[in-house]
Each structure stands twice: as structure tokens, then as C-alpha cells.
Amino acid sequence: AQSVTQPDIHITVSEGASLELRCNYSYGATPYLFWYVQSPGQGLQLLLKYFSGDTLVQGIKGFEAEFKRSQSSFNLRKPSVHWSDAAEYFCAVGSGGGADGLTFGKGTHLIIQP
Amino acid sequence: GAVVSQHPSRVICKSGTSVKIECRSLDFQATTMFWYRQFPKQSLMLMATSNEGSKATYEQGVEKDKFLINHASLTLSTLTVTSAHPEDSSFYICSARAPDRGHGGAFFGQGTRLTVV
Image 1 (cartoon, rainbow over the protein chains, first blue to last red):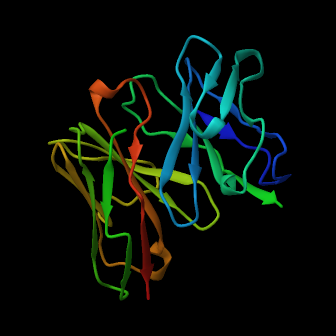
Image 2: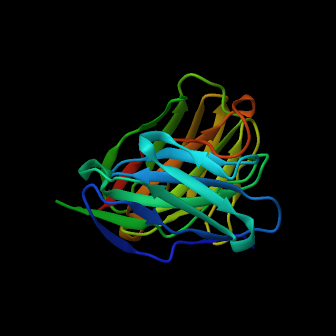
Image 3: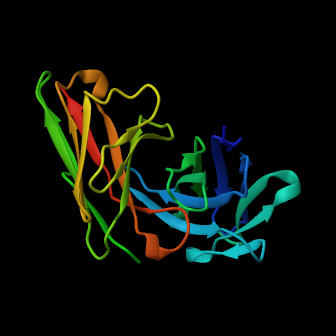
């Protein structure tokens, strides 16, 4: 069965500092990987996704993620965070055809210190 | 990007009543829609997958008679929580996928906060 692990429940980062959110996955086939952001009481916004090709993926809002097959990881990074980045971040894995729903990690709550 | 609209955004209902939540794809035809449930401070759990014109496929542990899903058109899926109880209070989110929009993933609605009192 597929699974996604986000080992950090909370992360606190100072504004302007760099950020890395960890994500490890378990999937039987070629994984299709996603990062979503959720503000309180809101739906999900797609930050970026990886299907194939270049393992470093650029997303919106200055985020990027790197797929490392050997480590079964898809960590999210941002070189300099802004206070508006405070939110819940979810990593997810799905099938290539998209016929199945996504499996989500438990999320990482990002806190930005002034 | 594609837009998925979910309505209502918030609903409060009395225990024992039924509540219908709508999920619409506004600028594309969604052959597949997914319904998720999110408990406070937890992740999203897939409840069911619905394909237009056919019966929904429910995940293990989800009561299909309690959570009725209808996907009657390519732009609309509805989730009806029947005989709601306080334990059904949760955040429900739909997502919609179009086959011509690329592989995997889907576009998410803004969610519905259901409170059963």
C-alpha cells in the first residue's frame, strides 16, 4: 500500500531564512508526487508536482522540490520564506493515470517568526 | 488554472438531518471527482471516487449508505451526509480531474466545514 510520511509536524523558521520540508513516500510503481499548501479553513493549492524528467521541480511562490528515488524522498524547499508562507503543507502521492485519489501525508505546520 | 467550486463553504445542521455538498468544475469537464475528509489538524483521507454516470467507489471503512455520492454530469458531483451526527463534523474537500489536463493530481475545491449540533 502506498504511504507518505512527513516527519515534521511543526517547523518554525525565521522570516527570510531558508526552508526545507521533508517528505518520504512508499509506492509500488513510479510515483507521481505533489506538494499542496493549505491556509486555515481553506482548500488546497497545488505548489508543484513531479511526474518524470528533471528531478528538481520548480513551483509557484518560489518553492522547489527535489525527487530522490534512492531515498524515496520529495523534499520541498524555499530559499527565503515570507510571513505569508505560514500555513499547512501536505505532500501527496498518486498514480500516473490519475484514476485513483491521492494519498496524503499528515502535513507540516509552518510557523514563521518575525 | 482550472477552477473547482464547492458549496456551501460552511454548514451547521441538527443531528439526524441530511446535508448536501456540491462540487462543480467550472471550466472543464471532470470525468472523475474525489471526496476527501479532513479532521481537525489531520491529513486528508480519501472517502470515495466518483466517475460520471456510474456508482461511486468507496474506500474501506466509509459507509456508502451514509455518504451518498452522485456524479450525474461532467461538471457536478454531490456528497450527501445522511442522518448526520456530531461525529460527522469535519472538513470535506472535493477534487476534480479532467483527462486532458495531464497526469495525476486534481484540482481541489475550497472545502466545506460541516458542524453537526
